[in-house]
Length: 159
Image (cartoon, rainbow, N blue to C red; front, top):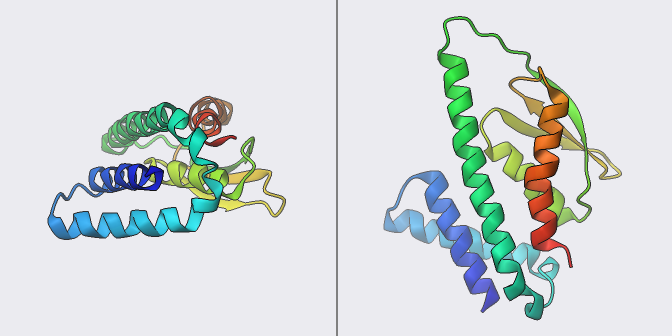
């Protein structure tokens, strides 16, 4: 049952991100959700803790949509200005999340957010390298990730 609920959530996220609400896209989203859950099912934890995690997972999803909208707006404002004032670059982000699932989820959330892109993870899985469109305040960006996505991931998926 929990895999079905998570699959529906993944499918809804897929539909929202793709912006296409056609039947073929719905079926494609369901297939991708099933494949994703199949890959990480052993990391989802026991079913008795799953239902308690739903509010935290929904909170993470809401945070993602909020960050998606805010960063899309910021990037749109930045690129439409007559004079581009950017400091693009790559910075090292120290990871508090430890499991492969958590690291992958964080990297994907960062990549799906306009203006940022996960580039690589260190061999010891302690550092995530992130490319940002504007690195004028790297420390604020690191705090934003730590207090946002990373904290919500730990709340939702730590056992």
